[in-house]
Length: 202
Figure 1: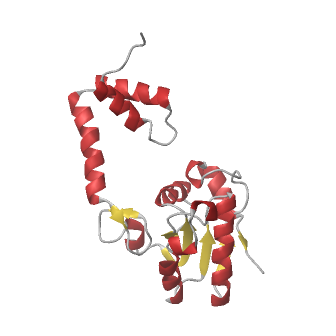
Figure 2: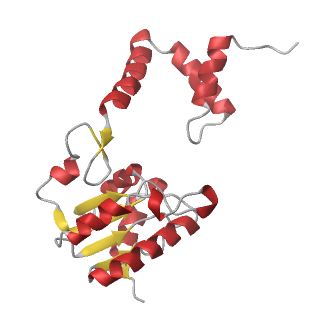
Figure 3: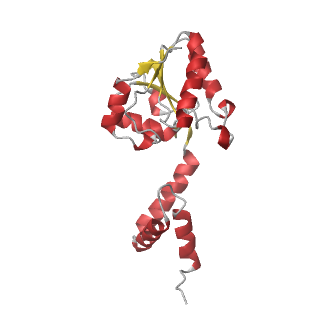
């Protein structure tokens, strides 16, 4: 008869397996690691998750995560308000910031256009983006959606909508792996891609 884990251990493994990039075996290893961790570390991890869920929210300006009224990037007066980098998810901002080569502001779409998944332009945070652009302060929009079919379609859609406003629209240069996520790109690749961005023309 096959060995069966206790119910509480199975539940821990089941929830850990829901994490991105974590399979059944990795979930088991993590579960046993947590069970062998000190009471303080285990409680600290659980508390940090609960605290983050309670206090973090989306910045009303850009959509980044924050526990203040607006995120630290939007609040930084040293950043270039004339540039907005459009990304799919808030985690992509961290990837851009690690590269250390963009000094403007950001806008998080909350996804990418994907008709097969029922995601159209109306499901993305485009209304707030165009409100920011119509304020007249922005001179360039850098489209940093993922180099996937959905990301490319989203970038093209946004570029066409921005074009009549007379604002420069650029796209991260190729060099990022097609089909990959911006989140996993290294700093050197992101720096080269941003430096080699090209204006979109029609």
